[in-house]
Amino acid sequence: MKEKNEYILGTERAELHRLGLQHQVWSGEARRGWEIAEFTEGQTILDLGCGPGYCTKELAYIVGQQGKVIGVDQSKHFIDYLQKGIELDGLENVDLQCASFDDMELEEESLDGIYHRWALAWSDNPQYIISRLYEALKPGGVIVSHEYYDWSIFQTEPQLPALNHAVKTAYSSFENSDGEINIGKHLPRMFQEVGLEVISQRTISKVGYNYDLVWQWPKSFLEIYIPKLMESEALDPKQVEDALSELIELEDLPGASICCPLMCEVVAVKA
Ligand SMILES: C[S@@+](CC[C@H](N)C(=O)[O-])C[C@H]1O[C@@H](n2cnc3c(N)ncnc32)[C@H](O)[C@@H]1O
Image (cartoon, rainbow, N blue to C red):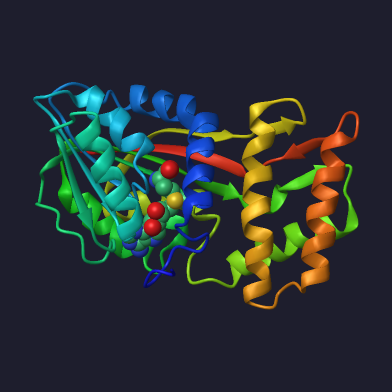
């Protein structure tokens, strides 16, 4: 069943699995960002747009029993799933809020750190949300962002016609949505506008080969999102069928690769 204001890729089981797989590919990058920010025991950290909580749980172990992680997400499915997970794992230092970023409750100067990954790209008012995040950070608090810098570089090698068209249609659907898919490239400016000081930046590129785990990241995205493009009539059933067949074909081609959307990391501190 569809949720109200549902996130563009949905919240069903398949998307839950895709987010888990995605976390396997990206967890090392998340840890690197948290190390730069010196996230540590005893801190209070917000995981903005926590989804099913793959990072929330890791952060809960980092801050320990004396610390706290706040997970915010508007998806009830994801929050319920995460609530069960933290209970099973005996994690007592996680507070969850099922809320939109506009309505979330954050105390002023209460946070040592904030992490968000693939969260602000779907928002129609990121500058307002960033100003709220700024207010919620303690002086010296650090925000770590992992967002798309340039989604449009997503391509396969070799390029196959129906698949290529589906990838381009997916990008157009993001461009036509309320958010800014390439929000990552704007974050350094937006952070500075609210008074945050950017202390570290890097872009993160990944190319998947048909024998490795990185390949599974774009593959699982395409398997879920290409059929969704039929709902908005951006693609017809035949185009979807052809694109998915070419995805299978691609996997068997010697030397095939997938260039993934370019990501970036921005780390900023409140003076
Ligand atoms: C791509 S998922 C990423 C989940 C998680 N950050 C991760 O890296 O696995 C994006 C999440 O942001 C949430 N989200 C997007 N826009 C939101 C908003 N305006 N308010 C609250 N949650 C939002 C969605 O419900 C979804 O769970």
